[in-house]
Length: 88
Image (cartoon, rainbow, N blue to C red; front, side, top):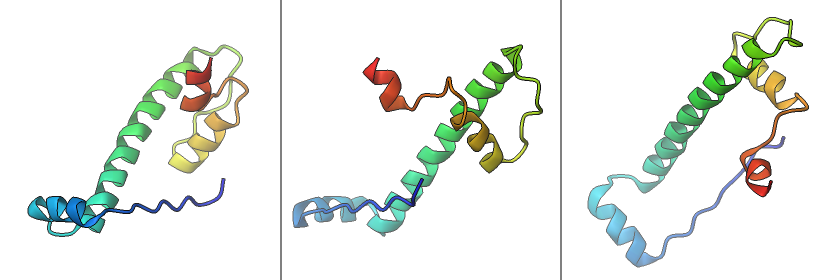
């Protein structure tokens, strides 16, 4: 997977609304994405640790670091992204 760059365009009205509450819109967006990533990681880790532990055919150890865990899970034949699950 390549790095993902997302561009968000806010018009003057949207910026004025956000500036009413936020001291730095860019920082808030970055922190919101980080928070969402952390929540998604917790759910993924919980879901897949349970699946791996209940899979009798899986006899390897479960990786203790995030990158190896994600590589293991996303490389499995039974792994589907959210978009793939929703399409079924």
